[in-house]
Every structure is written in structure tokens, then in C-alpha cells.
Length: 142
Image (cartoon, rainbow, N blue to C red; front, side, top):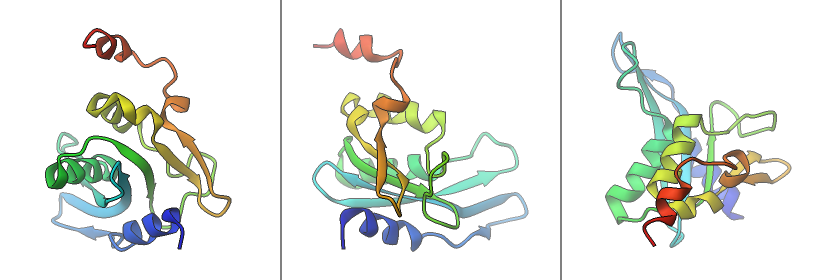
């Protein structure tokens, strides 16, 4: 099984939409990331009515990676709802997640994001964030 299918299967195991309470839903968007060393970490979306506690599956997966291994570099990411990414923007992280990945580690600009699993099409984060505002701050730390 190739790495993308492995990531898909690991994320799919997290997909079981549920109401945690009358105010909070979870597990309706899922994600798996492959860390720089090849370890795989997963995450799921959790949303509350107030909006301030919402966490996307992508950020939860990245936070799990950092919490459990101290790693900050992601090689590959797959995220989806009830079906694998199938083009037309499905599976793409939101703007907040894209920003978080770049702030977590500038090398994440080279992470691959699955766009269409069946066609095995992916894009690099830097392709969808070509003029990131924070690049200069990293440049100033060298």
C-alpha cells in the first residue's frame, strides 16, 4: 500500500461524526499527516456553537505530531469529510491551517497536500501560499 492510501486509511478510522453535546460536534472532518521522520499522526475536527473553540482536523493532527514527538515538519497531509479528496478544492486545508503550518515550521512550505486521491494529485503548500507574509521573519533569524 502506498503512503497516500496508508494516510487515507489512518484518517478514515477517525471519521465517525458525532454530537459530543448539544453544542459540540466532532469527527466530521478528519486528517492524517506524515511527519518528517515518517511517523503518522491523525486529527479530527471539533466545533462548538461559540466558534472560538473550533479546531480543524489538520491543526489537531499537527498538534498531535508536535505533542507526541516534538516534530514540526510535515511531509504529507490528507484531509476529508465523508469521501477522499476528489479535486475541486476538496481536502484543502482552510486558510487558518495553512497559516499555522507555515508558522509552525517554514519547511512546511514543501509539504504535499492531497487534492485528488484517485488520480494521486497533490500540491505543495507553497503553491497555495505563494507570497506568505512571514517569510521575511524566518529570513531575519538566520
